Length: 334
Ligand SMILES: C[S@@+](CC[C@H](N)C(=O)[O-])C[C@H]1O[C@@H](n2cnc3c(N)ncnc32)[C@H](O)[C@@H]1O
Image (cartoon, rainbow, N blue to C red; front, top):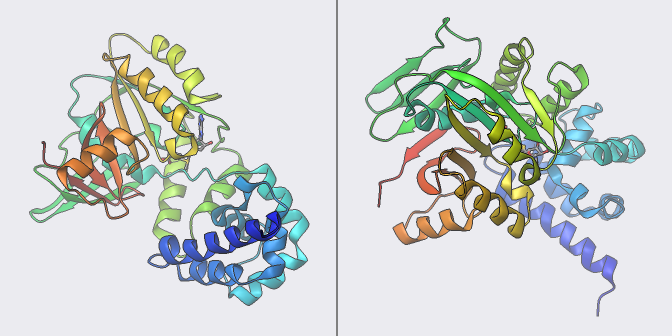
């Protein structure tokens, strides 16, 4: 039998190789080279093994290194920088987590939100800094075969423009009124805090300049009217927040890129809470299979999500969405 550390080293090596191949290859040459390099580097793998398992993630390591000044150079440069700055990198990895906040995801929530009459109360679980709680403050450009539809907030064009490739019957034609908003997160981030804002920037992959620009524009909007963010676990905190939302509005609970952080029983617990509130509209924008019932629905319809998220409305899969909100493909109703 192999000793435990050797098995663990092998799994870290495999994880970094897979990260390079499956997650980074199409979208980040820098992270692809870095992850490939780490997958072959005994010294760096030994350092990673000294961290608790959830802290060995590539996204966390690379964001921490860039946050501390490693730059976006070659793997050889990263390696030498990490060996020189391991203590501070390690401390940052232990203190922080991957909380990427992508305002662009509002573009794939809007079709469902725009279909609701009257004012809405928005509750986001797993809100990070709460940038997705402001779908009424962004401008949108939906590009489809029949042209581009532009939507602006009631008080005029927003500095944050969310662009989305739309494949479906009709892109949204209105931005709903948000009467009330609040979020829950294990570790809410304060977008007005320069270090937290910089951490969110470091989480955006090196080549994704448009996403960094969007983050700055959205942060500028949100810091002038910061959201109410409650610290705690989403399963424990959701019921009181639903009870608190104004009853003369349509309550919408949503989450995006969050439930993967929960284990399977806790995901089911959250889904059961939502099913017990038929008066609430529940929007889930998560990786395919994160909610087992949406995975089953896709399989039954023979739909291949091809790396995209699944948007479901009250438990029914309605669209495949680009993970950063860059595309929306409506699913046919079964
Ligand atoms: C990848 S971020 C996504 C943020 C935001 N929803 C978005 O789409 O931009 C996931 C967030 O979920 C939060 N989170 C993870 N597990 C949670 C839990 N059990 N309860 C509350 N928040 C949680 C994390 O702290 C993190 O801020």
